[in-house]
Image (tube, rainbow, N blue to C red; front, side, top):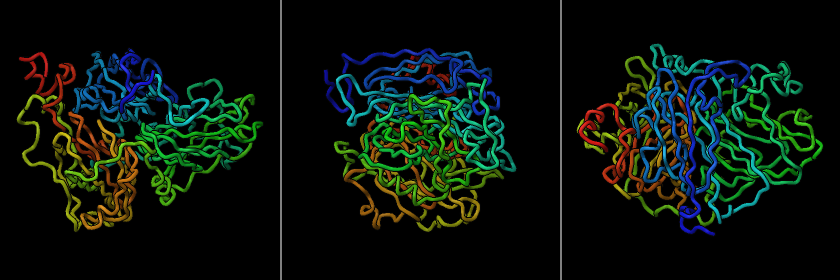
Amino acid sequence: MACGGLLLQCAEAAKARHFKWEVSNMFWSPDGEEKVLIGINGQFPGPTIRAKAGDTIVVELKNALHTEGVVIHWHGIRQIGTPWADGTASISQCAINPEETFTYRFVVDKPGTYFYHGHYGMQRAAGLYGSLVVDVADGEDEPFEYDGELNLLLSDWYHESIYTQMVGLSSKPFRWIGEPQSLLINGRGQFNCSLAAAHTPGSNQCTTSGNRQCAPVVFPVLPNKTYRLRVASTTSLASLNLVVGNHKLTVVEADGNYVDPFVVDDIDIYSGDSYSVLLTTDQNPSSNYWVSVGVRGRQPKTAPALAVLNYRPNRASRLPALAPPATPAWNDYAHSKAFTYRILARAGTPPPPATSNRRIELLNTQNRMDGHIKWSINNVSMVLPATPYLGSLKMGLKSTLAAVRPADTFGRGYDVTRPPANPNTTVGDNVYVLEHNTTVDVVLQNANALANNVSEVHPWHLHGHDFWVLGYGDGAFPGDAGYAARLNLKNPPLRNTAVIFPYGWTAIRFVADNPGVWAFHCHIEPHLHMGMGVIFAEAVDRVGEVPKAAVSCGATATALMANDHV
């Protein structure tokens, strides 16, 4: 039976899918070096959730960490009607205390490639993540055909604990976390050795026998078939590029939205991105082929991650004869922009409203405050409260927001090509209150960091919404002069994560039609930890009854003593 409507939802076919999870620390060797990470039910990465559009996901999550809270964010799921299930500590809910259990219940309203991860402190960088795949509802079809699926969850891995990293980021003098020790594909990588040592002078051949935790990832395929590769990046820092030796890739989905198909040799994938690409196994069937993942946007000090595309019936242990394909140069931004600019909406995608009601311009800068290094937005570095905004705003607590609201713009005279003339900053809540059902444009402006000639890649992720990516530009945002002429209103892609390139700007548009309190932030873990984000509060008075367990902490805990719900 076909299920009509935009949400591809059919009440008769939808199911409730129940999961019982326990989050705990455990020893693991993702790249051959044993460390302590955060896993779920003894697994790393966490269990894959597979559902159909319209299904209800129910996750009973117990925190078995000994001394810290935990939350899980369902990245890309819009949480329509369930903002308390978004899984953002201090924003949508209280952190779940050790030995306590919280139940997430939400609807996955549209098909796509998603993932989940920790959103408390830097727990994502400690391994708290996994895949979430939503298939089309019964009776619906994808707008492309394929014979099988392969899932690639990409991440980076540090040997230093997240606690040491966080102390360094907050220290005087500042201690940067450095580059990751390895890149992981589905939780596996290799440190200080190479699977392709024969083609990598000076490297050691990896010997992974006896340690399945870091054994090479093998993707079995049959010749002359088409496979859908679902690729997502949950990296803490690294921007990545994916290439499969001798094979073309056809991009068909980005962040759970169909795109106009286009063929490439490789794809860039930033932290928070997800894609589906089609690969046809039309090469010499007597060979296996490398899947290679390398670093983009930063001078790489981390070896590429390698996996094997195993043409059956060849042995999986038979390594490809050719050298792994090289990913583009780390600073080849022309290559990155050419790929990004080709991502356009597939025919039939809802177009954006022709105009907006409000434009918010956000300048991303690196600053100093009392000897600390911060990332700031319009010269304010975000700090989060003890009381989740969803609870405090819903209950109307007067102390929730500062009297002075964050600015909608920044000074036009700011020179984005140089370090800030005044490097000093302050901290604040960075909460923007949006009127219900208004159309909002956000312009993300990149700039030079504190050091000369340094401007970094920043992938920004919006919770609770998809947005249209209207356009990109180099240099300073032009303001009203020429702004409208630079926008694509015909077929802009719908995304939930958008990149701003060094010294450039990116413009997005969304409709504030999902009551709740939503984070909008750089998805690079240390950058968010250092204050690179804002909050959008939308029609909180229209939010339904909030479960008491979600917001029973901080100032709301006292207020709730007299009430059963928010």
